[in-house]
Image 1 (cartoon, rainbow, N blue to C red):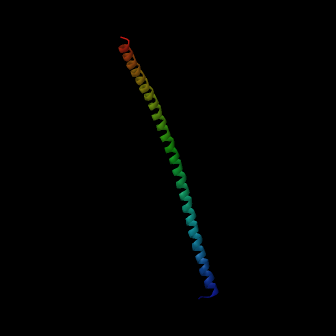
Image 2: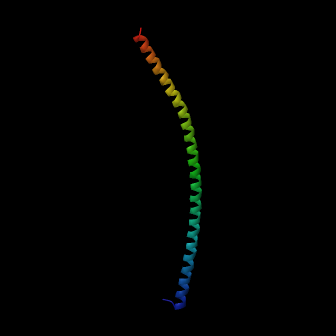
Image 3: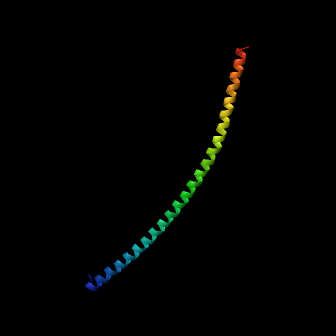
Length: 89
């Protein structure tokens, strides 16, 4: 074991090393926070784009669904008319 001054100097050196390491960790955490913030922004933009595309698909489906129901109703009316024509002949 060294003298008291040597031991204190050693501990001061270790303390400075730890302080430097903590500073690096803090900087890394700031970088990670910035990356997460950027990722959140990108995900929000992606979600908006996906919602817009789904809205477009819903509008197209609604228009086609209306036409499909119209054709089915017209076919049903034609079948009923044909059956009534055969029945009342």
